[in-house]
Image (cartoon, helix red, strand yellow):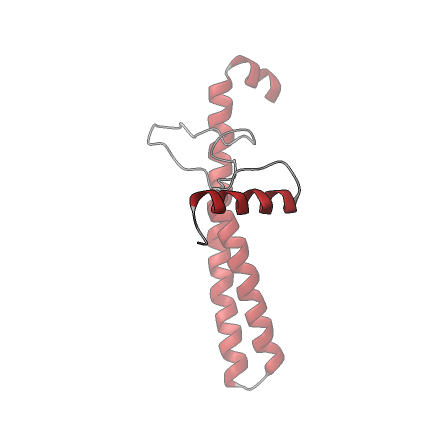
Length: 127
């Protein structure tokens, strides 16, 4: 049934899928925030009553919840302002591609280093 909807109206199917993802990731980020606060409470309680394992457990809860919250926040699709129109975040879309300032060069590490050295020498750096 989902495939039939995708074939019949791909824009609507994408919008519905995106809205569900947005709700899920926002909920996950909020729950991670609550867990982070719980971790702070555990950490402080462990420090006050001088129970080290409780403090360590609170710190671990804080770390895990912060990591989960940040990943959920980054994955949340952005609303475009149009009613019900959520951008496509399929694996091939530009939003999902990693942005890297470095270009991929062919060759081994040593070949790339030799090329950089040659460029420096040609530009006059190092003199």
